[in-house]
Picture 1 (cartoon, rainbow, N blue to C red):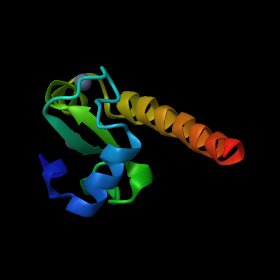
Picture 2 (cartoon, protein in one colour):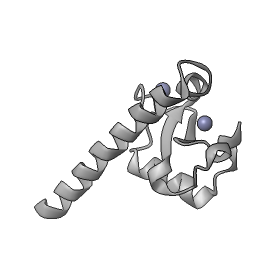
Picture 3 (cartoon, rainbow, N blue to C red):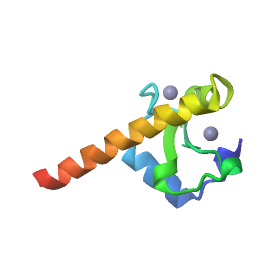
Picture 4 (tube, rainbow, N blue to C red):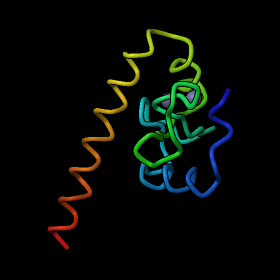
Length: 92
Ligand SMILES: [Zn+2]
Ligand SMILES: [Zn+2]
């Protein structure tokens, strides 16, 4: 799977942002950083295009439902995180 080709620095950043847990089911084992928009379709290694998943959910993201389903789902999750990060800025 193309998701194994992410630069390790970006992998660490994505895992840290996601709290070292699968963003689909919360599992903390066997994590894989996944490209929301696949590299083959023009996706990049930017943090905004990466999401942490466990092995099982990563398999689902590549093999179940359609391409648009996961893109919309993951983009919504990342958008929520941005708001949380912004809020933390105001609190501290
Ligand atoms: Zn999972
Ligand atoms: Zn993937």
